[in-house]
Image 1 (tube, one colour):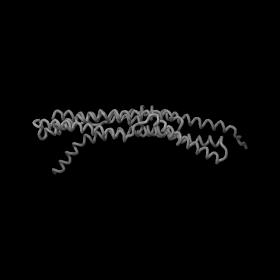
Image 2: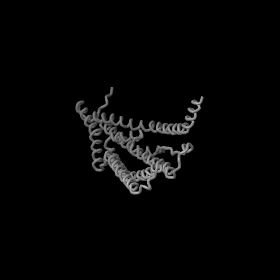
Image 3: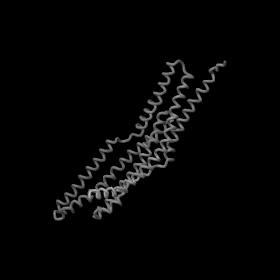
Image 4: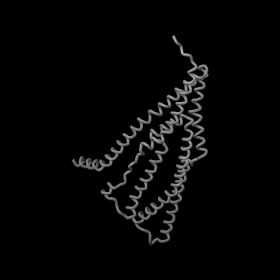
Length: 286
């Protein structure tokens, strides 16, 4: 009986979080399903119709089957492989971003230098003033206080590196978006990224909220630590909770529309051109 009571009490303590997570998940799922249903059909249909219309165009204005096949294969290779590759190379050349390895190495180096510096200063001070060396928990608290200040200094040193990295990635993404209108493959990829929620803009939107929550979480415990206020069971309900605020559907749709409009224009050109050529074919009459 006691075991059952304890298990029920633990479940009761977890239930607010579980209920909140469930509501957040359900709301997110409903919104994502609506976006998927609306967004996935249009670019897929336009992309498929474009290649179908292009095959009709080549067959109308082309020659024999072998020549038409080579023309279609060359067009596909140019629009799907060559153009996206060149666009990516141009973006990385004009706006080179520091590699993630360099970012990680710089962060570790800043952390190592800061840690060695504060440990050396604190140890030297205690070595010269042995009468002031704290005992037991007080010394541990002293070290932790300096460590917390040191962590803030590391964050300030690393944040500009991350901002520079993200800024260069945004410039690369912006340049690729400008070249999307000459390649249906790029437009299709950008459209699918937006629909699936893996686009650069949505990731940056999430990252900004994650950084804000990280600061809020750190400040919550830092204040209590500096005040030497121990945590109590009643403080559990006051812990900061991360609640991701999804972008409005109109924001995703605004980024999706240029890709859809570009594919629609390519489709219109691929459809209208063979229609003019079909007029030269005689119509058999009985």
